[in-house]
Length: 112
Length: 112
Image (cartoon, rainbow over all chains, first blue to last red; front, side, top):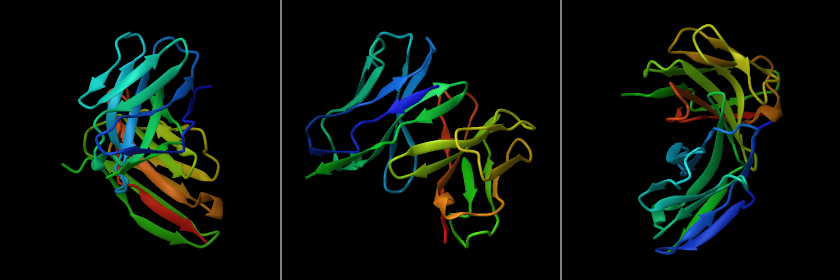
């Protein structure tokens, strides 16, 4: 069975600093996709970044980047130059059979 | 461009009452999904529909039924609501989930 684990229920970061959110997963597939979704207080779900498992290069989207370690089944999200608008719940997700399984989420608080 | 539209946004039920959550998408997607979000548990898949006329159980289908009325609409029914079904419910759709999953704005359901 596919599972996603986010071991940090809550994280805090000072504005302009860098924070890393952790995610581990389990799957028997060799080819799959991983995602980070952001959920601000509005409850809207926003795709932050996507990683294809067969690509060795880590995905980057502006201030957001991932550290993908396939052998360790680890997929962490790094947010650089944190902004107040980054405060949200962040979900790690794993694709299987055209569905997504989500982790429990990490609440990110940004201090000014 | 509405995307995924869910109704209602809020609902309070008494134990044993029934209700249907409505979802419609205007992006001509084949796949539609119902998730529930609970604190500390992330989003869990209730049911999904890979195409018009097909539905399949997800991780937590007990107590729910679904109908894929046509390509646009995918409804979720609670036949006899229980307090354990108090949650935020999200409908989502995609053509190919590895590209992006499009979410509705959610329904906050409380069962007393």
